Length: 497
View 1 (tube, helix red, strand yellow):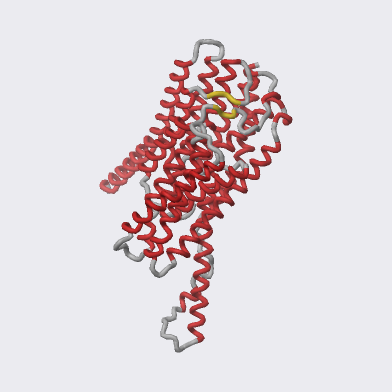
View 2 (view 1 turned 45 degrees about the horizontal axis):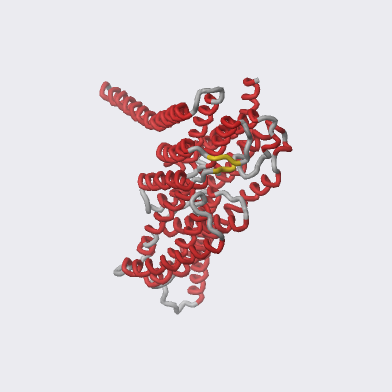
C-alpha cells in the first residue's frame, strides 16, 4: 500500500516537472522577444536627439519592432511551410534559410521610400494636424501588430498587409471621419480576398494535374520525369526572375516590361539547358516509383523557398516600418508627406524583427501551413511555390492588390482539393471497371467485391476545420484591425487631451 502511494506521488511529481519544463520552454521565446524590444528601445534612444518628439519616436520604434516580430512569426510561414511539410527542409533549416533571405531582402531591396498611407487608403490632406496624423499611424501600427499576434496565437495565417490597411483605415476614420477613406481602394482590397486564394489555388491545381497526368500516371515515370521536370524547373526560373525584379529589387533596379520579359526568357532558356543534363544524370538507375520522381523536385523547392523569402522581405518589410517611418518623418519635419524615406536604423529594426519573430514563434504557423491543411510532398509543395510566383506576376500586370499570404494558402488548398477530386475520379473508374469485369465472367482479372463498395464517401484530404478557421480570420482581419485601431486612437486622444 505504501509502495503504491509512493509511486503515485512520484508520478505526480514527474507530471509537475514535465508541465514546468513545458511552461519554461514557452516562456523562453517570450523573454527573448522582450529582450529584442528592449534592444530596439536602446537603438531608437541612441539615434534620436533629445526633444519633445524623442519619446514618441522611441515608442513608435518599439511598436514597429513588435509588428516586425509578428510578421516574422505569421507571414514568413507561407514561404517555407510547404517545404517543411514535404520534408524537403527540416524546421531548423527552413528557419535559417528564411531568416537569412528575409533579412537580405529587407535590407538590400526593401526600398528607401514607402507609401506611408498604405496604398492610398486615406487622404493625408484630410488630417486636421500633423500630431493627429502621428497618433493615427501609431494606432494603426499597434492595432495591426496586436491582430497579427492574435491570429498567430490561434494558428491562422493572415495577411499582414490587410492588417495594416485595416489599422490605417480605422485610425483614419477615428481621426477625421469616413470621408478621409478611399472606399474605391478598399473595395479593390476586399475583392482581393476572393481573387488571391482562388487564383493561387487554381494555378497550383493546374500544375499538379499536369505533373500527375504527364509524369506520375505514366508507365515509365522516370522517362517522363526526364522529359518534363527540366521544363518545370525552367518555368520556375523564368517566373522567379521576373518576380524578384518586379517585387524584390525595386530599390536597386526598375526595368520596363520588355526588359523583364527578356530577362525571364533568358533565365528560362539558361536554366533548361543547365538542368536537363543534371536531371538525366540524377535519374540514372532510379526506381520507377513516385517517391523517386518526387525527389527530383527537392532542390528546386528549396531554391523557391529562399527566393520567396527574399522577395517577401523586400516587399513586406514596409508593413512593419512604413507607419514607423511616417511617424519619424512627421516628428522630425512637422510636415505630412504621402511618401517618406526610411532611415537605415528603421530598416534594420524591421529586418531584425522579421528574423527574430521567425526564430522565436515561426514554427507554429510553419506547421499549420505545411502539415495541418493537407499532406505535402516535394512535388505538391513545388506547385504551391510556383503558383505563388505566377499569381503575383499576373496580379501585378493587371493591377490587382493581392495578398501573398492568401495566394500561398489558397494554393495549398487548391492542391488538396484537386487531390480529393482526382482520388474520387480514380476510385469511380475502378468501380466501373470492376462492374464490367462482373458482366464478363471470362475475364481472368481478379474481382474484389469490397473495392466496389469502398470509397463511396469522398475521401477528405483537406482539413475542413483549418479551412473554416483561416477563411474566418481572413474575412475579419480588416474590420477587426480597423476597430482596434479606432479604439486605440480614441484612448490616446482621451488621455492626451
